[in-house]
Length: 129
Image (cartoon, rainbow, N blue to C red; front, side, top):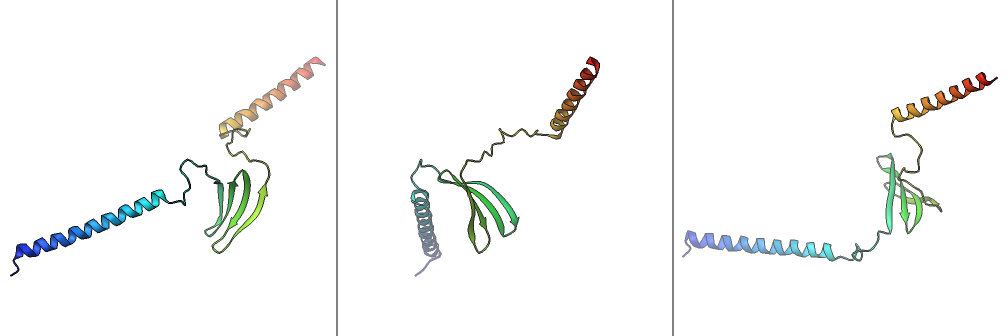
């Protein structure tokens, strides 16, 4: 004889086992991801670094990579990846070595200061003659 309490007890026991199996499965996937060898040994260097990406179209782009100290330019399409060029010297992307002004106002002040210096020198040269 099945009473309603027996049905609810069986229902609860079934779903608790289902929940336990799913939790165990998620935990196993987490452990596999955490300890997989695809990421390499913990603390190891990244041997491939993406320096910059330039999108040519939605499915085409140029990618500048640093692979073990070598700089490589590759082209990536939806069907193909090909090496375009490699560079021997390191490329500095930090922008610190760049002498370009950071804003228009800096650019304008540099240009105006240079033009005032040149006019001052011209006036001095004319006054000396």
